[in-house]
Length: 282
Length: 315
Image 1 (cartoon, rainbow over the protein chains, first blue to last red):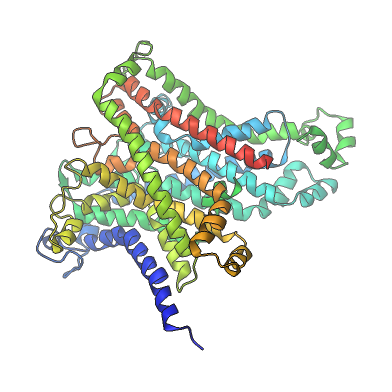
Image 2 (cartoon, helix red, strand yellow):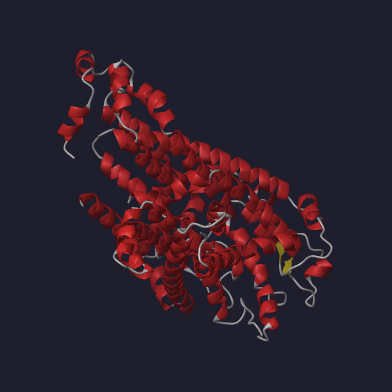
């Protein structure tokens, strides 16, 4: 006994149609990037042609990107910056999160809230004075300026998420290890750390994508084209005055988006867990 | 919680150890307060150098007439007074509140709608849920470039479609009020997935029996949403709103790519005006003063968040 036709129609109108409309609205710009990146210029700038299709697909724009611009450098820079700042952030936020979750010490609660407050500080509040600090430290124009400053927004986020994660792990195992003569550090490294691995993984994935996407620090700290990251390189080096290389711009935008999209699609569950950590914990 | 509780939970072995040689380094590390501070030290050091210090230095800069590379003199509140009289800044001030207010309302409504929609069962649900978040996870400036191309004055695909319906589309980023509307539209496009997926995660932990009971009582879908979903989603909604408001208020990337604050400085937000005044024009003192206008909004947000979380903890 199948569902009645009226019920099928109802589902069609109330679910399938809205889902398709939502997907089209949200994903169209990516389709547009992709199709622009493989269109020859003749088709790109033909106002009479149907813009939604491509007649003679070409890889010229991608070739231009890799042969005539520093795109490969930017990809490498972004990968190095995102990986290193993620590692640094984990190295700092795992111990901090553990200390705040497990230990009681004077001022501990205050420090926990202070870290949460820095999590809310937007980069755009600090970028001007920070530019001066970076100059004084002699880091201007190097990727190290980013490797050292990205953890400032990753560590608060990571510590905050990990406090919640460590708290969700029962204390019993660590306590029995202490009874058996393990030191507190051993209990942290050998017992708590392996149990917290899923939480650490979501912090890592989130940190990597946040670093990959960062824009304003990379824009203001680095002016040497060879040291730029993908988001800054594509927006600043591929637009010269009023001349837009739309094909290669879209090729660059697409290639710069693919790594985060891939990481995200593999780890979507961890990603959503990280995304909602603040919200659900609240 | 009281200190007593902490002591009661501590392992019994720790006590005789401490009694022997409490100053020995190895035993010092067994003390919660010592190890606690040590574990926090690297994170606190980093945040002091790259957040606390720049923040304080930014306040100092805003009180000087510093230019890039030229140490400035203390001028008191002159930068702020100058700003309040400046018409571009006044416009920026209005823009920032308008942009934050309008986009937040739309993101909330669309976010709830999409979350309710995705909370149904349908084929390929996992795929759809993953795809929905894409606008939020890819680098904003890169997706903004796609929008820049879609808003192009000559080759806009949006206008191409409108033309098929006999409508002549506007110059999206050129003639007011369209540039501000376009910026808001892209911000809503980018932010709605974050709202939707967070709300969806919140909805999935709601006990289904509540809906079943309501259905037996003859409640309509709207009534269930209004009286079950919304109240139980309240804490998620509040946290998402607070995070989103501060991010939108301090937005930079969309404006930088799409309009650079133009035409004629009409679409600046605090962050983009601070950048333009502080770096390309080199008036870093004045720029820092503009940036600091983000701070009161941050304070209000932080205060509301902390107040709300405290209240939740007490309940």
